[in-house]
Image 1: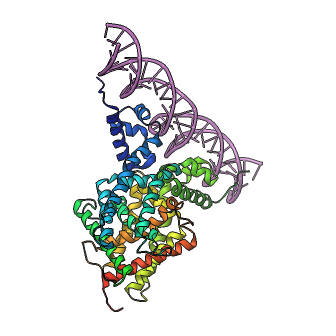
Image 2: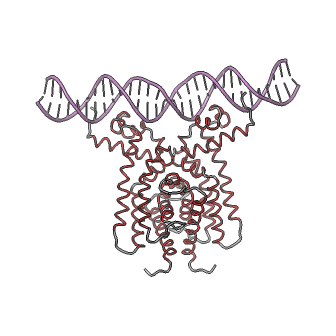
Image 3: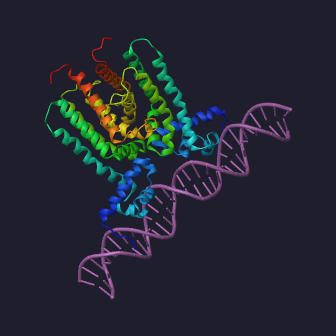
Length: 208
Length: 208
DNA sequence: CCTGTGATTTACCGATCGGTCAATCGGCCG
DNA sequence: CGGCCGATTGACCGATCGGTAAATCACAGG
C-alpha cells in the first residue's frame, strides 16, 4: 500500500516543501517535522535522503545558486548594444529571475536573519555575484569612494530583492497586491528609471 | 546576597539583552532563557516583568518606534532651503538614526523573516513611515506608475537599511569593516549621490 | 520586631526540536 | 519461490522551547 517512488522523486518533493517553508517561516520555523508533513513523507525519511537539517538547507540553496549566476552571466554575455543597453539587460535578468523564483529572496532573508551557521551558507553565492558585478562595472565606475561598484551592487540588488522580501509586509498598505504581474512590471520600470538616472549622472553628457 | 534593584533598572537590562540577541539570532534564536542569561537574570523573571515573549519583543520595538519617526519628522520640519536640501536632511537623519541604533535594522529583519505573528509587529511602524514619506514627496513625484513615492521610499530606505543588514554577510569580501565610521561615511555619500541623481532626472534642468 | 509586599528564585510542566535505530515494506534477481 | 537491498516507517532519545506555581528573599512601615 505504501507508494514507492524513485529516489530522485522523493528528494524533489522534500526539497520543494523545504523551499516553501523556509521562505514562509525562516530557518528555525522550518522544522524538519513540518517539512516532512508538507511533503507528505515520514520525518525520518528526510534524514535518510539528506543527512541533517543543515545539509537539507544547503541542498535547497544549491538549486538556486547555479541558476542565479547563470542567468546573470548569460544576460551580460550578450554584447549587443552599448554599456547602457547591457546593464539594462542584466537588470532585466536579475529581476525576472527573482519573479520566477519568488521564494528565493525570502529564503535568503530567512537564512541571513538566523544563526551564524545559516548565514555562512549564503555568503558564498552572495560573494560570487558581488565580485562578478564589480568586474562588470569596472569600466564605468571609479575604484573606491562612494561611486565604487560595490555600492551600486548593494543599491540595485537591494532595490530588487528588497522589494520582494518586504512586499508581504507592505501589502496591506498597498491597495493592490505588490507581487501581481502589473505591479511587478511597474517596479521593473522604476528600477530601469533608476539605472538611467545613475548612468546619466555617471557618464555625463557623453555621446553614446 | 541577591542584589535588589528598581523595577525600571531590571526591565532595562532585560530589554537591552533582548535587543542585542534578537538582532544576532532572530526571533526564534532569541529564546527567553538566553535573553535572561545575557541579562544576568533568572528566566522566570522575564515573564514577571513582561508577561510573554511576544510582549517582550513588542517592548523592544516600542523603544525604537517613536524615536525613529521623531528623528525623521524633526529633520523634515526644518524648512530651511529648497526641496533638495530638505530631502538630503531627511536622508541624513534616516542614516544617522540607523548608525546610532545598529541593532534596529537587523532586529526588524529578524522579525520579518520569522513567523506571521512577529511580522505584524513590524507592520505598524513600517506603514507609518511609509505614509509619511509618501506625503513628503507628494509635490515632486507623480501619483502612480514607476515614479510613485512608494517606489522611491522602498528604494532609498532599502539603500540604508539593506546596507546595515547585509553588512555582516559581505564583511569578509570587503577588505575593511563596512560598519566602521569611515566606511559608513562613504556609504552616506553614496546615498546622497543617488538622491542627487534622482532629483536631477526628476526636476530636469530646473534652476534651483 | 513583625508583617506585608513586591522582586526573585527553584522546580516543574507539556510540547517540540534535531536526530537515531531497529523493524518493515516492496520490488528485482536468481 | 527465497533472499537481498534500498526505501520507508514508528517508536524513541536528550535537549530545549515558552510558560506556570509556589516558595523565598529583601526591604519598608507600623
